[in-house]
Structures are given as C-alpha cells and as structure tokens.
Image (cartoon, rainbow, N blue to C red; front, top):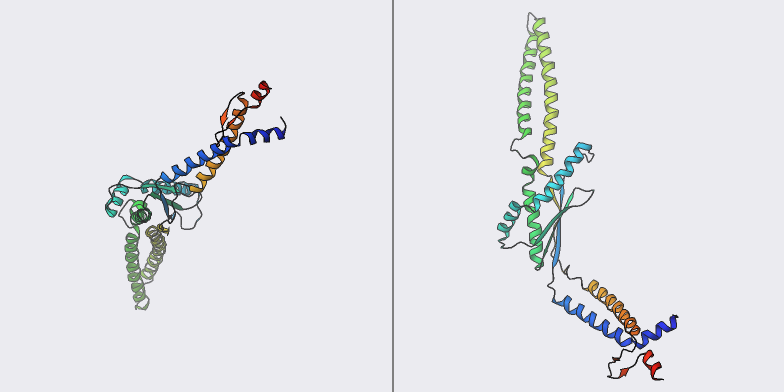
Length: 280
C-alpha cells in the first residue's frame, strides 16, 4: 500500500481518530484531577564512618553495615513510635530511608497529602537519629577517653615524683650513684609509659569527638510547593500519545472491516469503499 493510500484512509477515518483522542485525553484529565495531590520532601544525613576518609576492606565493610543499620533504624518501630509521640500523630505518612550510593549520606523521604506535615516528619526523624548517634555508635556507656585520662594523670604524678627524687639525689652529699642510676631508669620508664598513654588518650579523644559528631544533618526538609503526585504533565503527554495511537489503530481496523457503516458527527452515513464498488 502506497503512502497516499494511508493518508486517504486516515482522512476518511478522521472522526474515529479525533473521537478516540478526545475520549482518551478527557478520561486522563478527569482521572488526574480526581487523584489527591501528594507532596514529597527529603532530609539528608551524613554518617561519619571514618576520620581519614581512607578505609581498608574491614573498615569499608563496617562502614557499609553501619550505613545500612542507620537506614533500617530510621524506619524501625521504636523510632517511628517516638516520632508519633513527638508530633502527636495518629497515623504516619509514607517514610523511606535509603543510602545514597558511594557516599556517607542517608536520604529520608516523606510523602503526605499535607506539605507542612511531610517536612515536619522528615526533620523530626532526622533529629531523633541525631540524638541517638552516640548510643547507636558505641552501644556502651563506657568512655575510654576518661579512663585513659585518669591513667595519664597517674603516670604524670609518678613521673613528677621520680623527677623530684632525682633532683634531691644529684645535690645530696655524699652522692649515691646507684640510687641516682636507679632513679634515672625509673624516670625513663615512666616517660615511655606516659608518651604511650598520652598517644592512646589523644586517639580516644579523637574517637569520642567523631562519635559525638558522627550524625550530622546536611540538608533539612523544606515545605514542598508543588505536589509530586499526580504528575500532570506526564499523564497528559502519555494520554495524548495513547489517544493518538489508539485512534490510528481503530481507523485502520474499521477500514479493514469491509462493508461497515459509521456515523460522522453530522449524522451522515459514510459507506466503505467495498460497498460502493458492489453498488456500482
């Protein structure tokens, strides 16, 4: 069949195409307007899993587990119960928490028919996770920095005592070389212990600082101005495409049904080409 014949068929069946397109697009418009608008907003948290940013395999595995743990905790029953109590809600909106790939970020997304409520829920949930950061990180109330700090203070006191003893011995008359040598050895030993404990203490303080700031809110949720559902433009575009394709399909279908009569909008009967040939 030549291209001209296709155009002739489409022109003869133009009312089928137009009617199908009109009915489809009208249905889509009415259906879209009947859908209750849903608003979506998100808050983003950072979970600091490493101080240096460089992880070996075991640390990388731990960091991945930690991120997934926080994502699960965000939608766990105890956290959601606390969220409902804080906001005095009887029913929660749709909440999802997902780890953004290749980052230390977790995205908390909330969908609700009330835009202000969606933003409040996302931000309150972020606050709950932030407040529970220390407990989720360590799982213990023991503060290693405080323990090491006490040990450093004790060694410092012992070191000062031996230094004072050494100062007395070197000015004492008559001198006691053996006692001076022994005291000097004790000072050297206490200094080594002090340096080692001080290094451990500084590392513990760094870990405690990281733990205290492990969860940070990178981006708070804002009140959405436009609904995320329904997608009006997309629905209209798909409705137009479907209506046009459906109209073209019906046009060729009716054309292949020989002898079929149809009414155009003016009420006039049109006769297929096969019927005309029979009458002639």
